[in-house]
Length: 260
Image (tube, rainbow, N blue to C red; front, side, top):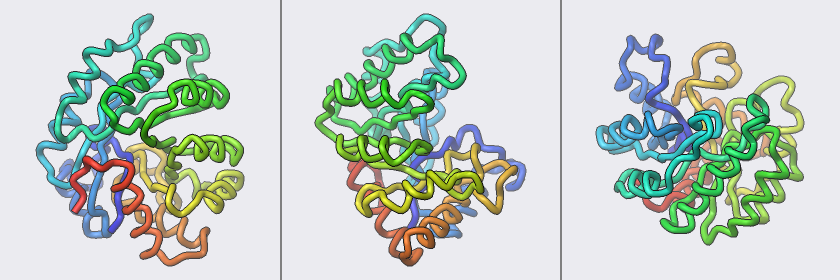
């Protein structure tokens, strides 16, 4: 069984499946995907991701505010986040983190919001899903500062081995997406070869970043199989081994998920 550890089911382009989310999920299930983690990115979509987790028994969700979805000048309220996290199908916090690529001027606000999510992780014990882009030093500094009692994950990892090793040393997992299949991603492939077996996850981040051979099309959860098959070849293991290992890792990191 495969698990898509990070997808945005409320944002999928469903044209290839006649506009039907049911059909899109069935297509993924037909390719061996047994569970989906639907990710929250804002206060506005918290209800949507929780609704999807309530609707499908093989979908769980997270709630949080993406660094590029912050309201100008205002971090989310801790009371709001804790209330949203108090739901049986909300198994994780995020995605949260830092992204200086598009909004370097918002670094201070992003750091404030990231700290708030990390505080919620300490209070609830739920794992945190971290987005980081062009913010290596600050991301690691805030994770070290938080000293979380439980693991989290750096999702859709695109950084170098030095950052991966630093995150692994903090107890974090590394999740790889279709980016690892891109022609210009050799540095990321080197990371993919080195991540320990018991710390690796796979994801689509759909509807974004479709892997080869689907690059340029809207990404779909069914394409997590393409990511997993590529990684298995890269790491010199069978597809079945990689699927079983990453699923076991997911269950360990997200113990509240309803994975059969």
